[in-house]
Length: 311
Image 1 (cartoon, rainbow, N blue to C red):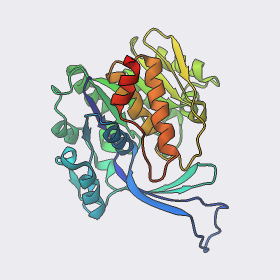
Image 2: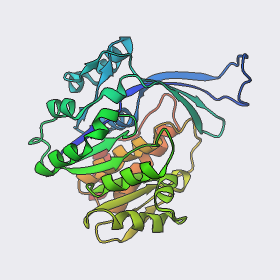
Image 3: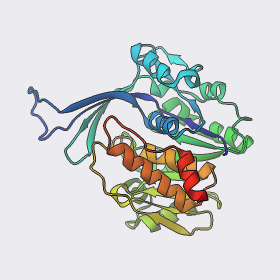
Image 4: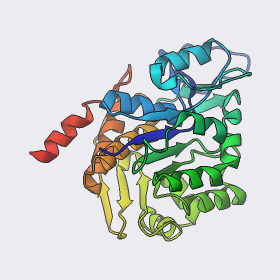
């Protein structure tokens, strides 16, 4: 299996819900469940890799409070060199709704201070040579995002393929945010966007056509993945051939981090050299398990998927 790494946002998620209807100002409601857990795009993907039994490296930062200590403890030795910023840790409160959707309230916290200089101290480019690095949470990690060109140069120098999942921009998909994202994709080997993001970026209403427009802007060997929620996922391989898999019907508990968990399953399978359609299947299966369980679980380890492939 080729090396894996994730670089980006790790923060605290406090999940509460379900809430219906939305409360009026000055009132209080009681919800059925709460969960304090590791969050952020990078954090969610890393937790899924832990459950899948996949080895990986992670570059992230934390704030200088008890939440920062808690986050580092959650990742043990992998977080030993995470920098501690002189601010509070980013906190995201997610309010779930009966249909499984959610509303977030997030503090800026430590994430904007995460820098490329810090990333270079945490990741061994030679150990990751020939592998894949997931770059996540682009619109929250301001200092790192400003240095993306340097990051892409570093990745190219070590033959590391970059997979990009920017997350949703705080200001929405403005023309400036679209241009930045399309410029980043020119340096990436895998795009991991959901259906709304993909169609919004390209102006295409059909997700398959939107994926083709993204691929045309990327290196010729790039893979484009469109995460379609309850409709599963589709992907274009290096040649442009399209594959898709459906999602199983599940009772949704919450969808927070579903795309990040899909990323973990998909990239784990991809770096284990499974065929692209099976990579999509692993991603969809792991994400479906995650959104339908409380406390959250991720199903069987990657080794079980690999064994099924052999038989």
